[in-house]
Amino acid sequence: MAGSLNKVLLIGRLGADPEIKQMVNGKSVARLSLATSQSWKDKNTGEKKEKTEWHRIVVFNEGLVNVVQQYLKKGAQIYVEGQLTTRKWKDEQSGQDKFSTEIVIQGYNSSLTMLGGGNSSGGIQNDNNQSSSNSPDEGSQISNDMDDEIPF
Image 1 (cartoon, rainbow, N blue to C red):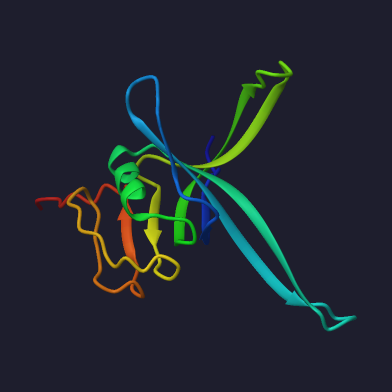
Image 2 (image 1 turned 180 degrees about the vertical axis):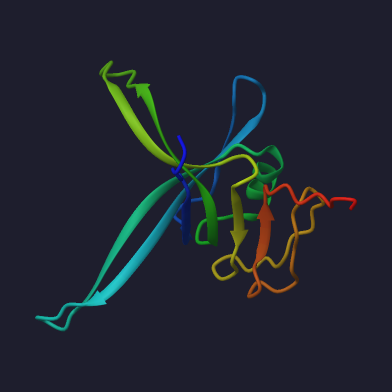
């Protein structure tokens, strides 16, 4: 369909350590629980209010799954770009159809960037289209973009 876009951009903190699973085809997948929060002051009471949204992030890129497993822990702040996907599955106990909405990081138009704070392990060095920095404040970009140099 021309004129449509499915792109999600989030900055938040991991609510738990990443969960790494093996798929039937032998490849690994990472599941992340990401919290985004907003806060405001109630106009009537002056009380500070906060609302947290939880997002399911699924990483299918094999190289990125390894980096997630090695470097991300609960509390790490990350920036993700991905696509919103809803999948249908059957609840084993009730037999009812269930739906899960997830942000999928897969393919050339998705990325995950570690932003320092909460997990100050520093930068990452990996040669698979992934760049690094030496300062957690600068962040470490891990991208699935096709950044191959064009020889002309």
